[in-house]
Length: 276
Image (cartoon, rainbow, N blue to C red):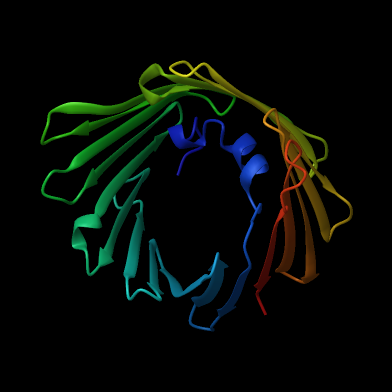
Protein backbone atom coordinates (compact mmCIF):
# COMPACT_ATOMS: atom_id res chain seq x y z
CA UNK A 1 0.00 0.00 0.00
CA UNK A 2 1.16 3.51 -0.76
CA UNK A 3 1.11 6.49 1.54
CA UNK A 4 -1.34 9.05 0.22
CA UNK A 5 -4.47 10.98 1.17
CA UNK A 6 -6.19 7.96 2.70
CA UNK A 7 -9.84 6.97 2.43
CA UNK A 8 -12.80 9.35 2.58
CA UNK A 9 -13.89 7.68 5.82
CA UNK A 10 -10.64 8.89 7.42
CA UNK A 11 -11.67 12.56 7.14
CA UNK A 12 -12.51 13.73 10.67
CA UNK A 13 -11.92 10.24 12.09
CA UNK A 14 -9.22 11.23 14.60
CA UNK A 15 -11.46 13.82 16.27
CA UNK A 16 -14.44 11.45 16.23
CA UNK A 17 -12.41 8.65 17.83
CA UNK A 18 -11.25 10.88 20.68
CA UNK A 19 -14.86 11.95 21.35
CA UNK A 20 -16.47 8.50 21.10
CA UNK A 21 -14.00 5.62 21.49
CA UNK A 22 -14.15 3.65 24.77
CA UNK A 23 -17.15 5.60 26.12
CA UNK A 24 -19.58 2.90 27.28
CA UNK A 25 -22.79 2.78 29.30
CA UNK A 26 -23.15 -0.98 29.86
CA UNK A 27 -21.03 -3.85 31.22
CA UNK A 28 -18.76 -5.53 28.69
CA UNK A 29 -16.27 -8.35 29.08
CA UNK A 30 -13.94 -9.82 26.48
CA UNK A 31 -11.08 -12.32 26.42
CA UNK A 32 -8.63 -12.72 23.53
CA UNK A 33 -5.97 -15.34 23.01
CA UNK A 34 -3.62 -16.24 20.18
CA UNK A 35 -2.38 -19.69 19.17
CA UNK A 36 0.96 -20.69 17.71
CA UNK A 37 -0.74 -21.22 14.35
CA UNK A 38 -1.64 -17.51 14.18
CA UNK A 39 -5.34 -17.81 15.02
CA UNK A 40 -6.70 -15.16 17.41
CA UNK A 41 -9.83 -16.12 19.36
CA UNK A 42 -11.99 -13.51 21.07
CA UNK A 43 -15.02 -14.08 23.28
CA UNK A 44 -17.21 -11.10 24.21
CA UNK A 45 -20.19 -10.74 26.55
CA UNK A 46 -22.28 -7.59 26.99
CA UNK A 47 -25.39 -6.63 28.93
CA UNK A 48 -27.68 -3.84 27.78
CA UNK A 49 -30.74 -3.08 29.82
CA UNK A 50 -31.96 -6.46 30.97
CA UNK A 51 -30.69 -8.34 27.94
CA UNK A 52 -27.39 -10.18 27.66
CA UNK A 53 -25.61 -11.02 24.43
CA UNK A 54 -22.30 -12.40 23.36
CA UNK A 55 -20.19 -13.63 20.50
CA UNK A 56 -17.14 -15.70 19.74
CA UNK A 57 -14.79 -14.66 16.96
CA UNK A 58 -11.73 -16.03 15.21
CA UNK A 59 -9.22 -14.11 13.11
CA UNK A 60 -6.60 -15.79 10.95
CA UNK A 61 -4.07 -14.21 8.61
CA UNK A 62 -2.44 -16.18 5.83
CA UNK A 63 -0.06 -14.27 3.59
CA UNK A 64 -2.16 -11.44 2.07
CA UNK A 65 -5.50 -12.83 3.25
CA UNK A 66 -7.28 -12.04 6.52
CA UNK A 67 -10.22 -14.22 7.60
CA UNK A 68 -12.56 -12.96 10.33
CA UNK A 69 -15.46 -15.17 11.50
CA UNK A 70 -17.86 -14.31 14.32
CA UNK A 71 -20.73 -16.31 15.86
CA UNK A 72 -23.22 -14.52 18.11
CA UNK A 73 -25.86 -15.71 20.57
CA UNK A 74 -28.61 -15.26 17.94
CA UNK A 75 -26.96 -17.95 15.77
CA UNK A 76 -25.73 -15.46 13.19
CA UNK A 77 -22.38 -16.17 11.57
CA UNK A 78 -20.65 -13.06 10.22
CA UNK A 79 -17.66 -13.58 7.94
CA UNK A 80 -15.26 -11.00 6.52
CA UNK A 81 -12.54 -11.83 4.01
CA UNK A 82 -9.87 -9.23 3.30
CA UNK A 83 -7.47 -9.65 0.39
CA UNK A 84 -4.51 -7.28 0.07
CA UNK A 85 -2.76 -6.56 -3.22
CA UNK A 86 -4.64 -9.03 -5.42
CA UNK A 87 -4.07 -6.18 -7.83
CA UNK A 88 -1.19 -3.87 -6.79
CA UNK A 89 -2.23 -1.05 -4.43
CA UNK A 90 -5.68 -2.52 -3.79
CA UNK A 91 -7.60 -4.08 -0.93
CA UNK A 92 -10.69 -6.24 -1.49
CA UNK A 93 -13.16 -6.88 1.34
CA UNK A 94 -15.99 -9.40 1.07
CA UNK A 95 -18.46 -9.72 3.94
CA UNK A 96 -21.63 -11.74 4.47
CA UNK A 97 -23.77 -13.04 7.29
CA UNK A 98 -25.46 -16.42 7.61
CA UNK A 99 -28.27 -17.33 7.36
CA UNK A 100 -29.18 -14.00 5.65
CA UNK A 101 -26.95 -13.87 2.59
CA UNK A 102 -28.69 -10.68 1.40
CA UNK A 103 -26.49 -8.76 3.85
CA UNK A 104 -23.42 -9.58 1.78
CA UNK A 105 -21.21 -6.81 0.42
CA UNK A 106 -18.08 -6.56 -1.69
CA UNK A 107 -15.78 -3.54 -1.39
CA UNK A 108 -12.70 -2.66 -3.39
CA UNK A 109 -10.25 0.01 -2.24
CA UNK A 110 -7.55 1.50 -4.46
CA UNK A 111 -4.66 3.54 -3.06
CA UNK A 112 -2.36 5.94 -4.90
CA UNK A 113 0.21 8.50 -3.82
CA UNK A 114 -2.22 11.35 -4.59
CA UNK A 115 -5.64 9.67 -4.65
CA UNK A 116 -7.81 6.86 -3.31
CA UNK A 117 -10.97 5.26 -4.64
CA UNK A 118 -13.48 2.98 -2.94
CA UNK A 119 -16.41 1.14 -4.47
CA UNK A 120 -18.84 -1.06 -2.51
CA UNK A 121 -21.76 -3.12 -3.82
CA UNK A 122 -24.42 -4.78 -1.67
CA UNK A 123 -25.17 -8.35 -2.78
CA UNK A 124 -28.97 -8.12 -2.77
CA UNK A 125 -31.81 -8.17 -5.29
CA UNK A 126 -31.79 -4.35 -5.33
CA UNK A 127 -28.10 -3.56 -4.81
CA UNK A 128 -26.95 -0.22 -3.47
CA UNK A 129 -23.67 1.03 -4.87
CA UNK A 130 -21.46 3.31 -2.77
CA UNK A 131 -18.51 5.16 -4.28
CA UNK A 132 -16.02 7.47 -2.57
CA UNK A 133 -12.83 9.18 -3.68
CA UNK A 134 -10.12 11.44 -2.29
CA UNK A 135 -7.34 13.46 -3.86
CA UNK A 136 -4.40 15.25 -2.26
CA UNK A 137 -1.53 14.31 0.00
CA UNK A 138 -1.21 13.03 3.58
CA UNK A 139 -1.24 16.72 4.60
CA UNK A 140 -4.15 18.06 2.52
CA UNK A 141 -7.16 15.97 1.45
CA UNK A 142 -10.36 16.70 -0.50
CA UNK A 143 -12.92 13.94 -0.93
CA UNK A 144 -16.51 13.01 -1.71
CA UNK A 145 -18.81 10.00 -1.54
CA UNK A 146 -22.17 9.07 -3.06
CA UNK A 147 -24.67 6.22 -2.89
CA UNK A 148 -26.89 4.93 -5.72
CA UNK A 149 -29.93 2.64 -5.43
CA UNK A 150 -30.23 0.59 -8.60
CA UNK A 151 -33.91 -0.35 -8.20
CA UNK A 152 -35.20 3.22 -7.98
CA UNK A 153 -32.37 4.94 -9.82
CA UNK A 154 -32.05 7.46 -6.99
CA UNK A 155 -29.00 8.93 -5.31
CA UNK A 156 -29.28 7.84 -1.66
CA UNK A 157 -26.53 10.07 -0.30
CA UNK A 158 -23.78 12.49 -1.22
CA UNK A 159 -21.13 13.89 1.07
CA UNK A 160 -18.03 16.05 0.64
CA UNK A 161 -15.16 16.77 2.99
CA UNK A 162 -11.79 18.43 3.38
CA UNK A 163 -9.01 17.74 5.86
CA UNK A 164 -5.73 19.44 6.79
CA UNK A 165 -3.33 17.18 8.67
CA UNK A 166 -0.17 17.98 10.58
CA UNK A 167 1.97 15.75 12.83
CA UNK A 168 0.39 17.17 15.98
CA UNK A 169 -3.04 18.36 14.75
CA UNK A 170 -5.86 17.77 12.30
CA UNK A 171 -8.73 19.98 11.10
CA UNK A 172 -11.64 18.82 8.95
CA UNK A 173 -14.99 19.95 7.54
CA UNK A 174 -17.63 17.51 6.26
CA UNK A 175 -20.83 18.48 4.42
CA UNK A 176 -23.22 15.54 4.66
CA UNK A 177 -26.83 14.31 4.59
CA UNK A 178 -27.28 15.61 1.03
CA UNK A 179 -26.16 19.06 2.12
CA UNK A 180 -28.44 19.20 5.18
CA UNK A 181 -25.65 19.00 7.77
CA UNK A 182 -22.14 20.30 8.25
CA UNK A 183 -19.55 19.21 10.80
CA UNK A 184 -16.24 20.89 11.58
CA UNK A 185 -13.66 19.46 13.98
CA UNK A 186 -10.16 20.16 15.22
CA UNK A 187 -7.88 17.93 17.27
CA UNK A 188 -4.50 18.84 18.74
CA UNK A 189 -2.14 16.29 20.28
CA UNK A 190 -0.13 17.37 23.29
CA UNK A 191 2.55 14.67 23.32
CA UNK A 192 4.53 12.55 20.88
CA UNK A 193 2.63 9.38 21.78
CA UNK A 194 -0.65 11.18 20.89
CA UNK A 195 -2.32 9.86 24.05
CA UNK A 196 -2.94 13.36 25.42
CA UNK A 197 -4.90 15.82 23.33
CA UNK A 198 -7.78 18.26 23.03
CA UNK A 199 -10.63 18.26 20.51
CA UNK A 200 -13.50 20.50 19.52
CA UNK A 201 -16.38 19.69 17.18
CA UNK A 202 -19.32 21.78 15.99
CA UNK A 203 -22.16 20.48 13.84
CA UNK A 204 -25.29 22.02 12.40
CA UNK A 205 -28.39 20.54 10.80
CA UNK A 206 -29.94 23.13 8.52
CA UNK A 207 -33.43 21.59 8.30
CA UNK A 208 -33.96 21.86 12.07
CA UNK A 209 -31.56 24.73 12.86
CA UNK A 210 -30.00 22.49 15.49
CA UNK A 211 -26.43 23.16 16.58
CA UNK A 212 -24.23 20.86 18.65
CA UNK A 213 -20.87 21.91 20.06
CA UNK A 214 -18.68 19.37 21.82
CA UNK A 215 -15.31 19.78 23.50
CA UNK A 216 -13.24 16.96 24.90
CA UNK A 217 -9.79 15.79 25.77
CA UNK A 218 -7.61 12.95 26.90
CA UNK A 219 -4.68 12.89 29.31
CA UNK A 220 -2.13 10.15 29.87
CA UNK A 221 -1.54 10.09 33.62
CA UNK A 222 1.29 7.61 33.06
CA UNK A 223 2.18 4.88 30.59
CA UNK A 224 -0.62 2.66 31.95
CA UNK A 225 -3.44 5.08 32.78
CA UNK A 226 -5.57 7.30 30.56
CA UNK A 227 -8.42 9.66 31.46
CA UNK A 228 -10.86 11.25 29.01
CA UNK A 229 -13.76 13.70 29.28
CA UNK A 230 -16.19 15.50 26.98
CA UNK A 231 -19.02 18.03 27.30
CA UNK A 232 -21.54 19.33 24.76
CA UNK A 233 -23.84 22.33 24.71
CA UNK A 234 -26.83 20.12 25.58
CA UNK A 235 -25.35 19.52 29.01
CA UNK A 236 -24.12 15.94 28.51
CA UNK A 237 -20.90 15.40 30.50
CA UNK A 238 -18.99 12.15 30.08
CA UNK A 239 -15.75 10.87 31.57
CA UNK A 240 -13.76 7.65 31.57
CA UNK A 241 -10.75 6.09 33.23
CA UNK A 242 -8.77 3.39 31.45
CA UNK A 243 -5.95 1.39 33.04
CA UNK A 244 -3.70 -1.33 31.66
CA UNK A 245 -3.79 -3.89 34.46
CA UNK A 246 -1.40 -6.28 32.72
CA UNK A 247 0.27 -5.92 29.30
CA UNK A 248 -2.42 -5.48 26.59
CA UNK A 249 -5.26 -6.02 29.09
CA UNK A 250 -7.45 -3.02 29.89
CA UNK A 251 -10.15 -2.10 32.38
CA UNK A 252 -12.33 0.88 31.47
CA UNK A 253 -14.81 2.74 33.67
CA UNK A 254 -17.11 5.30 32.07
CA UNK A 255 -19.92 7.58 33.23
CA UNK A 256 -22.36 10.04 31.63
CA UNK A 257 -24.20 12.80 33.47
CA UNK A 258 -26.91 15.17 32.24
CA UNK A 259 -25.97 18.46 33.90
CA UNK A 260 -29.38 19.89 33.02
CA UNK A 261 -31.21 17.11 34.87
CA UNK A 262 -29.17 16.35 37.96
CA UNK A 263 -32.10 14.43 39.48
CA UNK A 264 -31.59 11.68 36.90
CA UNK A 265 -29.34 8.75 37.68
CA UNK A 266 -26.03 8.95 35.78
CA UNK A 267 -25.15 6.18 33.36
CA UNK A 268 -22.22 3.95 34.24
CA UNK A 269 -20.27 1.48 32.15
CA UNK A 270 -17.52 -1.02 32.90
CA UNK A 271 -15.44 -2.92 30.37
CA UNK A 272 -12.75 -5.52 30.92
CA UNK A 273 -10.63 -6.65 27.97
CA UNK A 274 -8.15 -9.43 28.76
CA UNK A 275 -5.39 -10.53 26.41
CA UNK A 276 -3.36 -13.14 28.30
